[in-house]
Figure 1 (cartoon, rainbow, N blue to C red):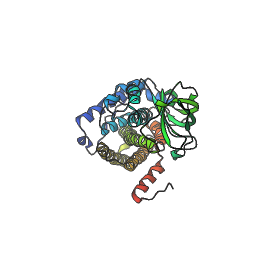
Figure 2 (tube, rainbow, N blue to C red):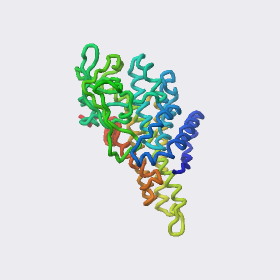
Figure 3 (cartoon, one colour):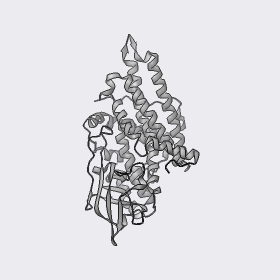
Length: 392
Protein backbone atom coordinates (compact mmCIF):
# COMPACT_ATOMS: atom_id res chain seq x y z
CA UNK A 1 0.00 0.00 0.00
CA UNK A 2 1.56 3.26 -1.17
CA UNK A 3 2.23 6.06 1.32
CA UNK A 4 0.72 9.42 0.37
CA UNK A 5 3.22 12.09 1.42
CA UNK A 6 1.80 14.83 -0.79
CA UNK A 7 1.58 18.33 0.70
CA UNK A 8 1.02 20.53 -2.35
CA UNK A 9 3.18 22.89 -4.41
CA UNK A 10 2.60 26.63 -4.72
CA UNK A 11 5.64 28.30 -6.25
CA UNK A 12 3.99 31.73 -6.72
CA UNK A 13 2.14 31.89 -3.38
CA UNK A 14 -1.22 31.54 -5.09
CA UNK A 15 -2.64 30.56 -1.70
CA UNK A 16 -2.58 34.29 -0.92
CA UNK A 17 -5.37 34.63 -3.48
CA UNK A 18 -7.54 32.01 -1.75
CA UNK A 19 -9.91 32.48 1.15
CA UNK A 20 -9.77 30.60 4.41
CA UNK A 21 -12.82 28.64 3.25
CA UNK A 22 -11.03 27.62 0.05
CA UNK A 23 -8.11 26.24 2.06
CA UNK A 24 -10.38 24.37 4.47
CA UNK A 25 -12.21 22.77 1.56
CA UNK A 26 -8.91 21.76 0.02
CA UNK A 27 -7.75 20.23 3.29
CA UNK A 28 -10.97 18.25 3.62
CA UNK A 29 -10.76 16.79 0.11
CA UNK A 30 -7.00 16.19 0.37
CA UNK A 31 -7.52 14.23 3.58
CA UNK A 32 -10.27 12.20 1.90
CA UNK A 33 -7.95 11.36 -1.00
CA UNK A 34 -5.14 10.33 1.35
CA UNK A 35 -7.44 8.20 3.48
CA UNK A 36 -9.85 6.70 0.95
CA UNK A 37 -8.34 6.94 -2.55
CA UNK A 38 -4.54 6.62 -2.46
CA UNK A 39 -4.44 3.38 -0.43
CA UNK A 40 -6.69 1.51 -2.87
CA UNK A 41 -6.52 3.17 -6.26
CA UNK A 42 -3.54 1.32 -7.72
CA UNK A 43 -5.15 -2.02 -6.96
CA UNK A 44 -8.49 -0.99 -8.47
CA UNK A 45 -6.76 0.42 -11.56
CA UNK A 46 -4.72 -2.75 -12.04
CA UNK A 47 -7.92 -4.81 -11.85
CA UNK A 48 -9.87 -2.32 -14.00
CA UNK A 49 -12.51 -2.10 -11.30
CA UNK A 50 -14.44 0.94 -10.11
CA UNK A 51 -14.42 1.51 -6.32
CA UNK A 52 -18.15 2.08 -6.16
CA UNK A 53 -18.13 2.35 -2.37
CA UNK A 54 -16.59 5.82 -2.87
CA UNK A 55 -19.81 7.19 -4.38
CA UNK A 56 -21.44 7.75 -1.00
CA UNK A 57 -18.17 9.09 0.45
CA UNK A 58 -17.91 11.64 -2.37
CA UNK A 59 -21.41 12.75 -1.49
CA UNK A 60 -20.49 13.06 2.17
CA UNK A 61 -17.57 15.42 1.46
CA UNK A 62 -19.71 17.58 -0.84
CA UNK A 63 -18.02 16.65 -4.13
CA UNK A 64 -21.28 16.40 -6.08
CA UNK A 65 -22.52 19.74 -7.40
CA UNK A 66 -20.59 21.84 -4.86
CA UNK A 67 -21.38 25.13 -6.62
CA UNK A 68 -25.12 24.44 -6.92
CA UNK A 69 -27.50 25.90 -4.31
CA UNK A 70 -27.73 23.94 -1.05
CA UNK A 71 -31.52 23.73 -1.33
CA UNK A 72 -31.06 21.59 -4.44
CA UNK A 73 -28.48 19.21 -3.01
CA UNK A 74 -25.39 21.27 -3.81
CA UNK A 75 -22.87 22.93 -1.53
CA UNK A 76 -23.64 26.56 -2.26
CA UNK A 77 -19.91 27.18 -2.82
CA UNK A 78 -18.18 29.43 -5.33
CA UNK A 79 -16.55 28.29 -8.56
CA UNK A 80 -13.00 28.37 -7.19
CA UNK A 81 -14.09 25.96 -4.46
CA UNK A 82 -15.47 23.66 -7.15
CA UNK A 83 -12.18 23.83 -9.03
CA UNK A 84 -10.16 23.08 -5.90
CA UNK A 85 -12.30 20.01 -5.19
CA UNK A 86 -11.80 18.70 -8.73
CA UNK A 87 -8.03 19.31 -8.54
CA UNK A 88 -7.66 17.43 -5.27
CA UNK A 89 -9.78 14.53 -6.50
CA UNK A 90 -7.75 14.17 -9.69
CA UNK A 91 -4.55 14.35 -7.70
CA UNK A 92 -5.85 11.04 -6.39
CA UNK A 93 -7.13 9.73 -9.73
CA UNK A 94 -8.75 11.22 -12.84
CA UNK A 95 -11.38 8.50 -12.80
CA UNK A 96 -12.55 9.54 -9.34
CA UNK A 97 -12.64 13.18 -10.41
CA UNK A 98 -14.53 12.17 -13.53
CA UNK A 99 -17.13 10.38 -11.42
CA UNK A 100 -17.75 13.54 -9.41
CA UNK A 101 -17.54 15.80 -12.46
CA UNK A 102 -20.20 13.84 -14.36
CA UNK A 103 -22.52 13.64 -11.35
CA UNK A 104 -22.28 17.36 -10.59
CA UNK A 105 -21.69 19.13 -13.90
CA UNK A 106 -23.41 16.84 -16.38
CA UNK A 107 -26.32 15.41 -14.38
CA UNK A 108 -27.14 17.77 -11.51
CA UNK A 109 -26.33 20.97 -13.41
CA UNK A 110 -28.69 20.37 -16.38
CA UNK A 111 -31.52 19.30 -14.08
CA UNK A 112 -30.98 22.45 -12.02
CA UNK A 113 -30.46 24.76 -15.01
CA UNK A 114 -32.92 23.32 -17.52
CA UNK A 115 -35.30 21.23 -15.43
CA UNK A 116 -38.67 21.91 -13.83
CA UNK A 117 -39.02 22.61 -10.13
CA UNK A 118 -40.57 19.17 -9.71
CA UNK A 119 -37.55 17.55 -11.38
CA UNK A 120 -35.15 19.54 -9.21
CA UNK A 121 -36.87 18.45 -6.01
CA UNK A 122 -37.23 14.85 -7.12
CA UNK A 123 -33.66 14.17 -8.24
CA UNK A 124 -31.14 16.74 -7.02
CA UNK A 125 -31.04 16.13 -3.24
CA UNK A 126 -30.49 12.39 -3.76
CA UNK A 127 -27.88 13.01 -6.45
CA UNK A 128 -26.08 15.37 -4.08
CA UNK A 129 -25.70 12.69 -1.41
CA UNK A 130 -24.88 9.90 -3.84
CA UNK A 131 -28.09 8.06 -3.06
CA UNK A 132 -28.81 8.38 -6.76
CA UNK A 133 -26.05 7.98 -9.35
CA UNK A 134 -26.25 9.58 -12.78
CA UNK A 135 -24.70 9.79 -16.23
CA UNK A 136 -24.83 12.06 -19.27
CA UNK A 137 -25.72 10.80 -22.73
CA UNK A 138 -24.41 12.90 -25.62
CA UNK A 139 -21.62 11.10 -27.55
CA UNK A 140 -22.75 8.54 -30.11
CA UNK A 141 -20.95 5.84 -32.12
CA UNK A 142 -21.00 8.07 -35.24
CA UNK A 143 -20.96 11.48 -33.58
CA UNK A 144 -18.20 12.56 -31.18
CA UNK A 145 -16.79 16.00 -31.97
CA UNK A 146 -19.97 16.80 -33.91
CA UNK A 147 -22.74 16.17 -31.37
CA UNK A 148 -25.26 18.18 -33.41
CA UNK A 149 -25.31 15.29 -35.88
CA UNK A 150 -26.76 12.91 -33.29
CA UNK A 151 -29.16 10.22 -34.44
CA UNK A 152 -30.82 9.36 -31.12
CA UNK A 153 -34.41 10.58 -31.35
CA UNK A 154 -37.78 10.58 -29.65
CA UNK A 155 -41.35 10.78 -30.87
CA UNK A 156 -44.45 12.16 -29.17
CA UNK A 157 -46.82 9.24 -28.62
CA UNK A 158 -49.53 11.24 -26.90
CA UNK A 159 -49.15 10.24 -23.26
CA UNK A 160 -45.37 9.54 -23.44
CA UNK A 161 -42.26 9.90 -25.61
CA UNK A 162 -40.74 6.96 -27.47
CA UNK A 163 -36.91 7.08 -27.38
CA UNK A 164 -34.58 5.21 -29.73
CA UNK A 165 -30.84 5.30 -30.34
CA UNK A 166 -27.52 4.72 -28.59
CA UNK A 167 -24.79 6.60 -26.78
CA UNK A 168 -21.24 5.45 -26.07
CA UNK A 169 -18.19 6.33 -23.93
CA UNK A 170 -20.54 7.23 -21.08
CA UNK A 171 -18.87 7.56 -17.67
CA UNK A 172 -20.89 6.06 -14.79
CA UNK A 173 -23.39 4.45 -17.19
CA UNK A 174 -23.33 0.82 -15.98
CA UNK A 175 -24.18 1.86 -12.40
CA UNK A 176 -26.33 4.91 -13.13
CA UNK A 177 -29.83 5.17 -11.71
CA UNK A 178 -30.69 7.96 -14.14
CA UNK A 179 -29.30 9.30 -17.41
CA UNK A 180 -29.65 12.83 -18.77
CA UNK A 181 -30.01 12.00 -22.47
CA UNK A 182 -29.87 14.41 -25.39
CA UNK A 183 -31.95 13.44 -28.42
CA UNK A 184 -33.70 15.01 -31.38
CA UNK A 185 -37.45 15.53 -31.41
CA UNK A 186 -39.55 15.07 -34.52
CA UNK A 187 -38.69 18.60 -35.68
CA UNK A 188 -34.97 17.81 -35.41
CA UNK A 189 -34.43 20.00 -32.34
CA UNK A 190 -32.19 18.68 -29.55
CA UNK A 191 -33.82 18.29 -26.14
CA UNK A 192 -32.92 16.63 -22.87
CA UNK A 193 -34.74 13.71 -21.26
CA UNK A 194 -34.28 12.06 -17.86
CA UNK A 195 -34.24 8.31 -18.43
CA UNK A 196 -34.49 6.07 -15.38
CA UNK A 197 -33.03 2.62 -14.90
CA UNK A 198 -35.74 0.01 -15.14
CA UNK A 199 -37.55 1.63 -18.06
CA UNK A 200 -38.28 -1.14 -20.54
CA UNK A 201 -35.88 -1.14 -23.49
CA UNK A 202 -33.15 0.82 -21.67
CA UNK A 203 -29.81 -0.96 -21.15
CA UNK A 204 -26.28 0.09 -20.16
CA UNK A 205 -23.62 -2.37 -21.39
CA UNK A 206 -20.19 -1.97 -19.79
CA UNK A 207 -17.19 -0.94 -21.91
CA UNK A 208 -14.29 -3.36 -21.34
CA UNK A 209 -10.64 -3.40 -22.34
CA UNK A 210 -9.70 0.20 -21.46
CA UNK A 211 -6.02 1.04 -20.96
CA UNK A 212 -6.98 4.42 -19.49
CA UNK A 213 -9.29 5.51 -16.65
CA UNK A 214 -9.25 1.91 -15.53
CA UNK A 215 -10.65 2.75 -12.08
CA UNK A 216 -13.59 4.56 -13.69
CA UNK A 217 -16.64 2.74 -15.00
CA UNK A 218 -17.66 3.39 -18.60
CA UNK A 219 -20.46 2.05 -20.73
CA UNK A 220 -23.08 2.57 -23.40
CA UNK A 221 -26.67 3.73 -23.26
CA UNK A 222 -29.00 1.78 -25.55
CA UNK A 223 -32.62 2.84 -26.13
CA UNK A 224 -34.96 0.42 -27.85
CA UNK A 225 -38.46 1.89 -27.93
CA UNK A 226 -38.08 3.29 -24.40
CA UNK A 227 -41.27 4.89 -23.09
CA UNK A 228 -40.25 8.08 -21.29
CA UNK A 229 -42.91 9.95 -19.28
CA UNK A 230 -43.56 13.45 -20.57
CA UNK A 231 -42.73 14.94 -17.18
CA UNK A 232 -39.14 13.70 -17.71
CA UNK A 233 -38.47 16.17 -20.52
CA UNK A 234 -36.19 19.07 -19.49
CA UNK A 235 -38.52 21.97 -20.33
CA UNK A 236 -36.24 25.00 -20.21
CA UNK A 237 -33.82 24.49 -23.11
CA UNK A 238 -33.78 23.30 -26.71
CA UNK A 239 -30.98 23.08 -29.23
CA UNK A 240 -27.31 22.19 -28.99
CA UNK A 241 -26.74 25.02 -26.49
CA UNK A 242 -28.27 22.75 -23.82
CA UNK A 243 -25.61 20.03 -23.76
CA UNK A 244 -22.83 22.49 -24.64
CA UNK A 245 -23.71 24.54 -21.57
CA UNK A 246 -23.23 21.43 -19.45
CA UNK A 247 -19.92 20.67 -21.14
CA UNK A 248 -18.59 24.15 -20.38
CA UNK A 249 -19.27 23.54 -16.70
CA UNK A 250 -17.55 20.16 -16.80
CA UNK A 251 -14.61 21.43 -18.86
CA UNK A 252 -14.00 24.09 -16.24
CA UNK A 253 -13.64 21.34 -13.64
CA UNK A 254 -11.28 19.41 -15.92
CA UNK A 255 -9.10 22.50 -16.33
CA UNK A 256 -8.51 22.44 -12.57
CA UNK A 257 -8.50 18.65 -12.33
CA UNK A 258 -5.74 17.91 -14.82
CA UNK A 259 -3.40 20.14 -12.80
CA UNK A 260 -4.00 17.73 -9.92
CA UNK A 261 -2.54 14.89 -11.98
CA UNK A 262 0.41 17.10 -12.92
CA UNK A 263 1.04 18.04 -9.29
CA UNK A 264 1.08 14.42 -8.16
CA UNK A 265 3.52 13.46 -10.92
CA UNK A 266 5.78 16.42 -10.14
CA UNK A 267 5.65 15.68 -6.42
CA UNK A 268 6.60 12.05 -7.07
CA UNK A 269 9.45 12.95 -9.43
CA UNK A 270 10.85 15.61 -7.09
CA UNK A 271 10.92 13.26 -4.12
CA UNK A 272 12.42 10.45 -6.22
CA UNK A 273 15.11 12.79 -7.61
CA UNK A 274 16.27 13.60 -4.08
CA UNK A 275 16.35 9.96 -2.97
CA UNK A 276 17.58 8.04 -6.00
CA UNK A 277 21.41 7.91 -6.06
CA UNK A 278 23.42 7.27 -9.22
CA UNK A 279 27.09 7.97 -9.91
CA UNK A 280 27.54 8.78 -6.24
CA UNK A 281 24.92 11.53 -5.88
CA UNK A 282 21.15 12.06 -6.00
CA UNK A 283 19.90 12.25 -9.60
CA UNK A 284 18.29 15.57 -8.71
CA UNK A 285 21.79 17.04 -8.62
CA UNK A 286 22.27 16.44 -12.34
CA UNK A 287 21.51 19.38 -14.63
CA UNK A 288 19.19 17.46 -16.99
CA UNK A 289 17.00 16.29 -14.11
CA UNK A 290 16.87 19.79 -12.64
CA UNK A 291 15.84 21.07 -16.09
CA UNK A 292 12.91 18.64 -16.15
CA UNK A 293 11.79 19.58 -12.64
CA UNK A 294 12.16 23.32 -13.25
CA UNK A 295 10.10 23.12 -16.44
CA UNK A 296 7.44 21.04 -14.69
CA UNK A 297 6.87 23.52 -11.88
CA UNK A 298 6.99 26.45 -14.31
CA UNK A 299 4.19 25.02 -16.45
CA UNK A 300 2.19 23.95 -13.41
CA UNK A 301 2.46 27.46 -11.95
CA UNK A 302 1.31 29.07 -15.21
CA UNK A 303 -1.65 26.67 -15.34
CA UNK A 304 -2.53 27.37 -11.69
CA UNK A 305 -2.68 31.10 -12.39
CA UNK A 306 -4.77 30.54 -15.52
CA UNK A 307 -7.44 28.49 -13.78
CA UNK A 308 -7.50 30.79 -10.76
CA UNK A 309 -8.23 33.76 -13.03
CA UNK A 310 -10.82 31.71 -14.89
CA UNK A 311 -12.46 30.90 -11.55
CA UNK A 312 -12.66 34.60 -10.72
CA UNK A 313 -14.26 35.29 -14.09
CA UNK A 314 -16.71 32.42 -13.59
CA UNK A 315 -17.67 33.74 -10.15
CA UNK A 316 -18.40 37.09 -11.82
CA UNK A 317 -20.43 35.46 -14.58
CA UNK A 318 -17.92 36.63 -17.18
CA UNK A 319 -16.14 33.40 -18.18
CA UNK A 320 -16.76 32.50 -21.83
CA UNK A 321 -16.90 29.02 -23.32
CA UNK A 322 -13.79 29.88 -25.36
CA UNK A 323 -11.86 30.87 -22.24
CA UNK A 324 -12.84 27.59 -20.62
CA UNK A 325 -11.67 25.72 -23.73
CA UNK A 326 -8.27 27.41 -23.56
CA UNK A 327 -7.81 26.46 -19.91
CA UNK A 328 -8.97 22.86 -20.42
CA UNK A 329 -6.62 22.41 -23.35
CA UNK A 330 -3.65 24.01 -21.60
CA UNK A 331 -4.05 22.04 -18.38
CA UNK A 332 -4.29 18.73 -20.23
CA UNK A 333 -1.24 19.50 -22.36
CA UNK A 334 1.02 20.52 -19.50
CA UNK A 335 -0.20 17.62 -17.35
CA UNK A 336 0.69 15.09 -20.05
CA UNK A 337 4.12 16.66 -20.51
CA UNK A 338 4.74 16.60 -16.76
CA UNK A 339 3.61 12.98 -16.51
CA UNK A 340 5.83 11.88 -19.41
CA UNK A 341 8.89 13.62 -17.99
CA UNK A 342 8.19 12.24 -14.51
CA UNK A 343 7.92 8.75 -15.97
CA UNK A 344 11.33 9.13 -17.59
CA UNK A 345 12.89 10.39 -14.37
CA UNK A 346 11.68 7.34 -12.52
CA UNK A 347 13.08 5.00 -15.16
CA UNK A 348 11.73 1.47 -14.93
CA UNK A 349 10.02 2.21 -11.61
CA UNK A 350 7.86 4.72 -13.45
CA UNK A 351 5.85 2.00 -15.17
CA UNK A 352 5.02 0.11 -11.98
CA UNK A 353 2.09 0.49 -9.63
CA UNK A 354 4.50 1.32 -6.84
CA UNK A 355 4.31 4.91 -8.10
CA UNK A 356 1.27 6.77 -9.49
CA UNK A 357 2.91 8.27 -12.57
CA UNK A 358 2.02 5.71 -15.25
CA UNK A 359 -1.59 5.57 -14.05
CA UNK A 360 -1.85 9.36 -14.30
CA UNK A 361 -0.15 9.28 -17.70
CA UNK A 362 -2.61 6.77 -19.11
CA UNK A 363 -5.57 8.57 -17.55
CA UNK A 364 -4.51 11.86 -19.10
CA UNK A 365 -4.50 10.28 -22.56
CA UNK A 366 -8.27 10.10 -22.14
CA UNK A 367 -8.72 13.43 -20.36
CA UNK A 368 -6.98 15.25 -23.23
CA UNK A 369 -9.58 14.01 -25.73
CA UNK A 370 -12.85 13.76 -23.81
CA UNK A 371 -15.32 16.61 -23.51
CA UNK A 372 -13.71 18.21 -26.53
CA UNK A 373 -10.50 16.91 -28.08
CA UNK A 374 -7.21 18.80 -27.90
CA UNK A 375 -7.59 19.88 -31.53
CA UNK A 376 -11.23 20.91 -31.22
CA UNK A 377 -10.42 23.18 -28.29
CA UNK A 378 -7.63 24.74 -30.34
CA UNK A 379 -10.13 25.49 -33.11
CA UNK A 380 -12.56 26.99 -30.59
CA UNK A 381 -9.83 29.43 -29.57
CA UNK A 382 -8.98 30.03 -33.22
CA UNK A 383 -12.58 30.84 -34.06
CA UNK A 384 -12.84 33.14 -31.05
CA UNK A 385 -9.79 35.23 -31.98
CA UNK A 386 -10.37 35.35 -35.76
CA UNK A 387 -14.15 35.31 -36.00
CA UNK A 388 -13.79 32.63 -38.67
CA UNK A 389 -15.47 29.24 -38.22
CA UNK A 390 -13.19 26.31 -39.11
CA UNK A 391 -16.04 23.86 -38.49
CA UNK A 392 -17.93 24.94 -41.62
